[in-house]
Each structure stands twice: as structure tokens, then as C-alpha cells.
Image (cartoon, rainbow, N blue to C red; front, top):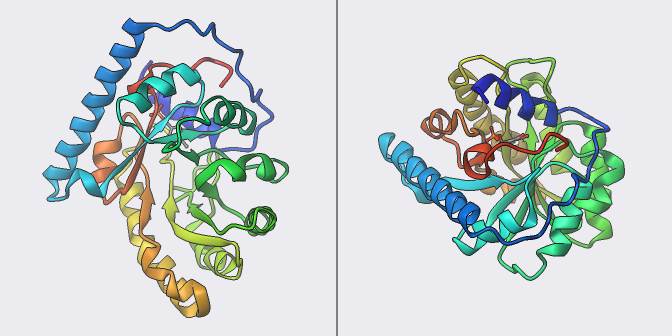
Length: 273
Ligand SMILES: Cc1ncc(COP(=O)(O)O)c(C=O)c1O
């Protein structure tokens, strides 16, 4: 599978879709060879992250690896967890719900929701999530706030920005960002932790990564002007979620603090996911 195919898949995960949410269950046979190949790929990615960070005078501690496990089995996640991986990304509410139930015993596992979160799925997704990557509308922010209020928790979120104005991608425009930051600032059960982007298909992703990084100080400034708790939390708005299997090096060079890598760790996803 080439880079274009991979990005195209990621892009389709970024739009509202009625795609099936529960890929068919795989036979739950332990596969030691597959696990060891997976662990080999995982450590290769960890090394590549460390090298990319060192190349721009950063350290790997500054870059969190979110292993995008959508379309892969709970067993694969278990194997990665056993090798020390803690952050996992999912895009479909039902799939996340099933895996969270199956893997409830992995107490240090942190779920990231990296897809487009439909409002009617908030109640399913939010109880499991450490971080929501893809909020991009005032309505979505209000719905997430209501759902988080129902859980009596304050939820960490990122705003997704469509920096390249790619029609195939979700995300607000850079011009809309300030008003969405204000909407999160006014939502008592949400805390804005930073920004996320998916670069346009077949484009050099570096300008999109640089553009997202340049927006982060603006988001922080908007939080400070909002005052109250949002202003107090402005310094914690420091995450840049960008970079996938084919381009995480460029993202790290531009300041990524979270890279979302799926295929390079788990292999190709099942078609239905
Ligand atoms: C939002 C998002 N980030 C990251 C990924 C992982 O992409 P890749 O498999 O190219 O690493 C996906 C996969 O679809 C995605 O939807």
C-alpha cells in the first residue's frame, strides 16, 4: 500500500460516515510470530521517533506515540501493551466500546478518539477516552460538554484544524479557530489541550504541520482572553497531534507532541475499519 492509499484512508476517517463500526471479530488464537513482528515494528517506530526528535534537538520524551489500532484486534493491542505501549487511537465508537470492554484489565491503557465524533456517539465514546482529537464545530463542542457533564468529568480535547482547506477532510478553518477556542473555553467540562490536523492527500505535509504549529500560540492567546478557568489552563494547551505512518518525522520536525501511527505498527487495516 503506497502513501497515497494510506493518507486517503486516514482522510476518510476524518469525515462523517455511516461506515460499519464493528469490524468482524477475528479468531482469538494467540499468534506468537505475529506478536513478535508487531513488537519489532513498534520498537522500530520508537527508534525512528527518537531519531527524528534528536534531529531537531528535541527528545523522544516530548513526543507521544499514539498507536492507531482501529481495524486491528484486541489481541494486537494486548501485544503492544505488553511491550510497553500505552496510548491507542480508535475512530469508531462501537469498535472502541468493544475493545475497551475486552481490554478493561489493561489499567494503564489510554484511549484516544482520533476519528470524527458524531454527536449521537458521544455518550458511548467519552467514558473511555483520555483525549478526543477531532472536535471541529460549535455543536460538537456543546455536545461533548454535555456528555462530559453527565459523566461528571472534565474532558481533555483537541480542536481539529483543516489547515490546507482540503474538502475531503474534517476540521475547522484557521479563521474559525478562535471562535471554537472560545466555545471550548466556555464549556465547563472540557479542557483544550491543543490542536490536531490531517494533511491533504498527496501533498507535502510539512507546510500543513508548520501551519498547525503556528496556530497553537493563537489558541493559547484566545484561552487567556477568555479568562477564568480557561485562562488558568492556557499553558496546558500545548499538544500538537500530527503525523502518521508516512510523515511522522516531518511532523516531529515541526513540533508534534503526539504522532498517530497505525499501519507502520499494526500493518494494513481490515477493509471494513
Ligand atoms: C486520524 C488518523 N490519524 C492517524 C491514522 C493512522 O494512519 P497510518 O495508518 O497511516 O499511520 C489514521 C488512520 O486512519 C487516522 O484516521
